[in-house]
Length: 138
Image 1 (cartoon, rainbow, N blue to C red):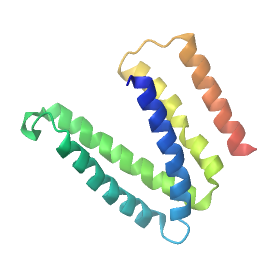
Image 2 (tube, rainbow, N blue to C red):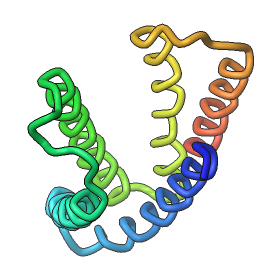
Image 3 (cartoon, rainbow, N blue to C red):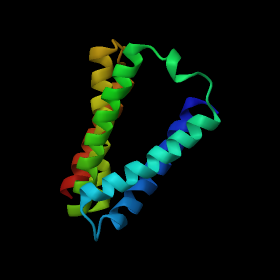
Image 4 (tube, rainbow, N blue to C red):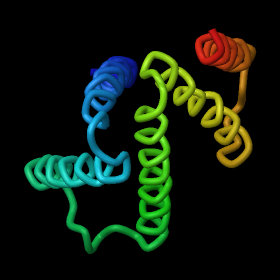
């Protein structure tokens, strides 16, 4: 499969996640819900990694470790905020606002990765931003 199909699957599972998480945080602290979800993901991810492993952990460069750890911290912070937002807000409004991460990723990719942005990026990012604002305040 190419990147687009993987991205569509990611979007599908993220959408399912929002609904399942909204139901899951109804009677528990959002932080505890995030911790439970994280343990499940930890076990699942390590299971997949061990059964499909192509390299040993000792071959991973220090720079890679640093950026993966920072990414993990950012993910954890994102999940804590997302679960809290789901707990107090409607999933149909929280999930689109969360997808503003796409617009942020486009901007950061241009700034830090020096990716060239075309009018497609600007138009798509603007539509995502506008859609999120419309849904959030409708």
